[in-house]
Amino acid sequence: MLPSGKPEDVGMDPGRLERAFDLLRGWVEDGTLPGATALIARRGVVVGRRWFGDAVRTPERRPIGPDTLFAVASVTKPITATAIMQLVERGMLSIDEPVRGLLAEFAGPGKENITLRHFLTHTSGLPEYAEDDEEIRRQQRGLDAFVRSYCRGRLLFPPGQQWSYSNHGFGLAGEIISRVTGRGYHEFVAEEILAPLGMRDSYLRPPESVWARIARVWLPGELPTDHERYNSAYFRRLGIPWGGLYSTPEDLAVYAQAFLQGGNYQGRRIVGPATAREMTRNQLSESIRDTSGVARWRTASWGIGWDVKGQKAPHNAGALTSPATFGHTGSSGAMLWVDPALELVCVMIGTRLAESGWVDGPVPRRALFSNAVVAAVCD
Image 1 (cartoon, rainbow, N blue to C red):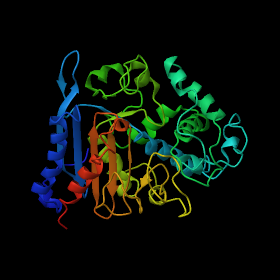
Image 2 (image 1 turned 180 degrees about the vertical axis):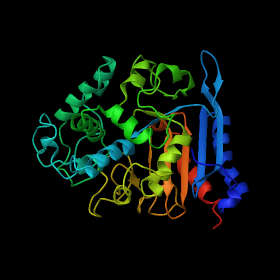
Image 3 (image 1 turned 90 degrees about the vertical axis):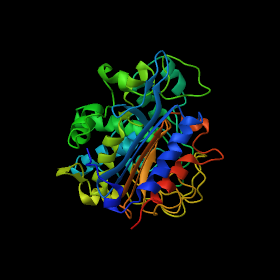
Image 4 (image 1 turned 60 degrees about the horizontal axis):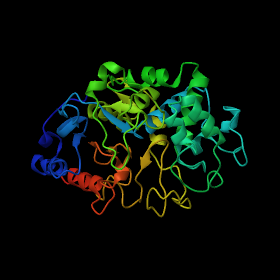
């Protein structure tokens, strides 16, 4: 856990920082969000931590507190990418080798040249979801069913030519980690990333003993089911490599700080400095366009597993962060970003499905919060 301190000790204005937290408080009070939490750290010191609203409302109301766990959805993706890069560092694979050599069943027209780099930068040409995604979930099938479906996925465009957000690559990356290490994806991540960094409140498959601590995600417009995202027992036991992590702002801040410090936190190194730099720099040429419909960027920018801000606008990290800012968001309402130029880490989670409109509607709330955080920096 990062140490705590005063904003003014690390060059931040406490009054301005409180304005950012007031935004979250207001979104809970006006009913936009059932609950929200945030953590801000600068120069390795936590200078603000707040929580508002309810973790659970039925059958018994329970407020969000310092021990609440959150589904962070696609913030899982950089962690899966980190595991892949650990294997690259150990000489066990290359991110530029064809995936077909690692997964023989990954076959089909145009797939012979798809590499792990394409997977981790969303340039493989594969779609976001499996064609039978809903059916797999409805039948409550395991990760192996997703792997088989992802291997059958049909290309939307030739690999490396465009950018389009995709879960396929990260699901298959998890399977590759299992096959290459023989340890299982979940075990490998827990032993090689979460444990070394002391992320004791982070789980890809949270045990039932901590379920009472997990905040429910509000899914407007979706009928409750026994296989719904984030909240169902099925989902919590699945541990999907593209979006299955449950964590706390404190743990996410430690993970982010490790990348801010070249892959190391308090003497516990998860990747080398060269790897950390490579993962957090833009991997894409200026000619690559965003064709996914998820964002509105004329030119895409992405690292290895990380969203790199670059010249993208609008952006969840706001207009005031530097182009070097990297991070990720999750459809569960989670957001994590790191600005190396400001030595700033931001974690913000609103417990409502991002696609329901509260994030990117007429009021771009993630960006508003991010701008307010950066405005508190004085030096």
